[in-house]
Image 1 (cartoon, one colour):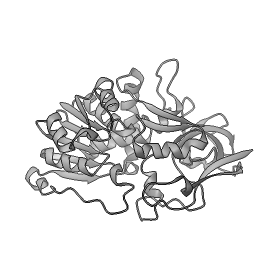
Image 2: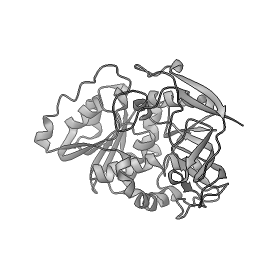
Image 3: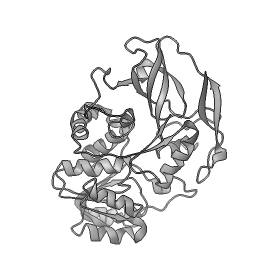
Image 4: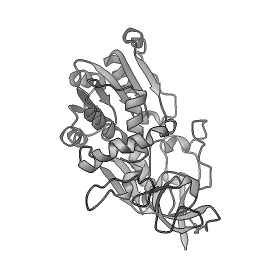
Length: 344
């Protein structure tokens, strides 16, 4: 059998280009003792992967040139040489960007009905699709949960502003805030279609298209009483606007800054940081990897919301391993509504 996998050939400067990558054929690997062979069914593509394509020192090691890249994936075990995992089980792991992966059993998390304890939700006859474990019930969902509740110290009655609010993380942040008793939730997005989705489907109190005018002005109109929490997925102009609207004791959780990921020069910081002195405000960055202790609590609380439909989610699905790169570039452009996944 032939395995197809994406390799990084050169480190992108600015926007990634197709010639920086190659789809390579290789033999399907065989598992050794303690390993499983997985046929991937869904791959995750995420903004943070752009940082790993650079050689710059960061919280995660850069992708190696000439070798297959990595990312979240969920698939079916087709051969197992590990106790506790059998052929036919479904597992979540971190060896995406390929059709088949050999995974150490200790790095494979069983999902679905065979998981013990079951990390699944009975959402009716259809159940929860495997792709959900890459999004609403996976890393992106936990990112939203931990960032809002722990890093931003959300409390009932807060006014919450979310940038990139139609994305996989942002859409969950806003909905969790509403379910937890926020007095007002505002979102920004990059199209009128996404703005309508935020209000009509996800229950945001207000939303605006950041392309329609200065963010600071639109935020002041949407949040005339200021904001208590800002969940930052974008950075740049959005972060400066949030600092300008921050109430006393306000908190900013920095999850991502997609607006600067492809910059070739350092991006200027917010010009109004002195306002944090007046408001006694706080800015804190976070990584979901530091908060996996919340996973059981997250699944226990969010799972029933997903099952009942109280928490809604969207996925943008691109089909075919050959289209993985285009799906990733689509995330950087903001083409996706909700979680971007690749179906194999």
